[in-house]
Image (cartoon, rainbow, N blue to C red):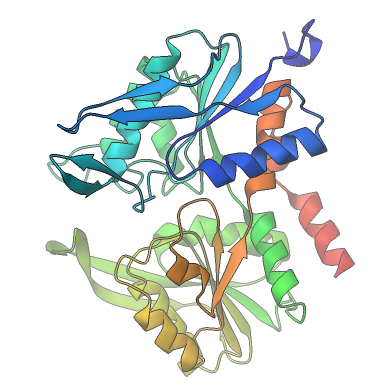
Length: 368
């Protein structure tokens, strides 16, 4: 039976874990104001740490009978805790452990437990190449086993990881509409036509992601072929031996480079430099998650040299102040998107239009 036909609505409870408090507050606002979800409120999960580093989760209020949505940001490295008198920064493992603690604190009393983790835990360790672990699959199975009914992430590195939990809900949301809206808001002179714009995939892994944009906008797409060494590993990544471009000319066009995340940013900057050298008018990049593990210096230099015009980044995960204040930073707000998603799931409605926002995109472009 659909929740819409139930005799009473199921109250929504948002539980923000460390680093997602602002996100939860905005989502609550949209649910209350846009969808009149009066039975929606935030319940905090207090993570108590002992001096040894052990911890426990304590819910401040009951969530009995509620439709619970736990928000977790495994990429938030600004959080820390005390252990043996030392300040310890929280790793993705720490955030994931707090998530499991919170599910345990609920104790099976909720109507349904949903997890919204925009940056999916261990999403880069999604396949086995040699004798190595399958961390993402193990994590998804663990959440399923402790009673999580639905897992939601954004722009998953490879959404085939959902195969690990075939009997569980798994939604991979993609902010294509929000990115296009942010581009048009900041650069109204951008024209999405074959003569003036081009999307480029920085590697084969991002091809499907970029194809979503080109398919919606009716544009050509270029691809950078990246071949990695099978033996040399630096910083946890296999070294790139070959990086070549395949596709139409970039000369005189606005070029958009889209990927799921920016870590060191080396690949994205290499693509941007190539495009500018080949005569691209402007080069933009977009990423759902911007980690900048090696700092911003090279991006600042690329911006000063007009190699890179702007970087569009969602607020799905933590961005330190240095990023927020960078002259090339452009925010893509996804909080309303998450609120619409929660409203749809809670009401038992289809999310097909969220996964395929074709009509919204073209209404947006028609207004421009």
